[in-house]
Image (tube, rainbow over all chains, first blue to last red):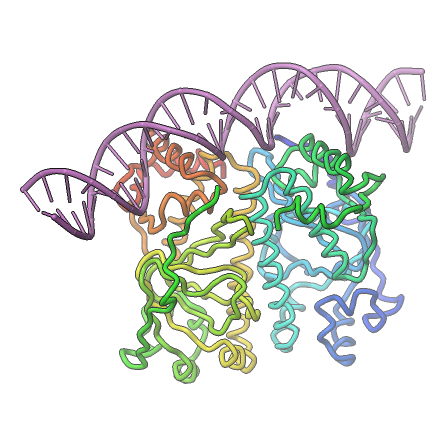
Length: 246
Length: 246
DNA sequence: CGATCGGTTGAGAGAGATCAACGCAGGTGG
DNA sequence: CCACCTGCGTTGATCTCTCTCAACCGATCG
């Protein structure tokens, strides 16, 4: 149950600031980020507050209960959002993907820690400056709030999964919901990339690593998926749906 | 696993509208509701949109996936917020208490159903009118957003509980968090009222009714709590804390 | 080549589910 | 006033799904 995260702690931020290189106007994730509601002039205003930040795989972007000095837009890569129990048991609250915003709640401290699953590109804003901007731009606040509402329904989906689904249903559900999230951000493919390891999935689904592995091979043997390096190929969506109990 | 909710379906809304009887200005829950950020003139504006609504115990305020025609402030009583799996398995996402706001996400449809655990008093607003008001009052939106952020951290607490805690820890945690919520709304007492039944707790904690019952009697035998009709008396908070693994 | 890391597989154990009986309070109707 | 029923909670016996412990496999790397 106790986990060794194997996390790199120092230097915590392996970051290169780049004010240059194509601004917000041609940001890859703008259409799917909170920024999509901003006008071009507003975007320039925002840009003056922004810093690009690159993080290497395995490093922490921020830690649980740490003062929230910045808020972040994920541009490229994937993050794991976790909470720890004092005895080391871990729950992965979710995974952040391109277009996701970290710091939605605008609270003083982060309620989770965030670690890079891949090499990561983000766009960050000093939190106080950002909240100032938000005060002045109600439609940006509305955009954040809409996202918060969406996050809340995702959290509810996850609670239903954790509380009432079997191991097989959990794994099938997880694959489908990840596919769904990729689809929302444009990417749609038969092969589903899994940037997280088995332990991360287990801690997300309330299972052990062994059970996740067994269920994946079971899905494979049922020809619902095909296990491939770095992910799974979704062979039979209908079967997956029925196995997920949706 | 399948549950008969025993829910009264028709008449769904047993409601008495009362525009009279002391307005928002002397509303019991104003200081702890979203309305607390409004000025007196704004409050009058809000009041013109509000309707009091009374619901009898056991009746549904709204159903999952139902178009969200109204948003609600809970004034008195308690609600159970649930989601169902197609096969009838149920997850209780939470319990709404006085001061809570239902419809935070301002989305077209409710993501949960809400049923009265006790006789209930609410103050409701036609959703479209309310969102209109929110557009015009950024500080109200900010208040809603802050609440959404708080709800999100509660949801994370619950995910950690569901995914990584043992049955005993779940029950101990639940009692403490309920106490915490009562305390936030002013009420603080050694005897914790439990307006929900054992099945509701079970469906909230991802357990069965029998396990909840067993864990409660175990806590009783350990002299951490005393089971009393309609609730529990908290005898040893320190012991409860340690049993809850916080 | 040995070592490490991530993942898979097997055997056995245990926490919680399932099935079943029972107790008690409240309501109903004779 | 008592017999009966129903709803809710408790307790016991047994079962099973998932965890635990352990071995193993292949890839990567110094």
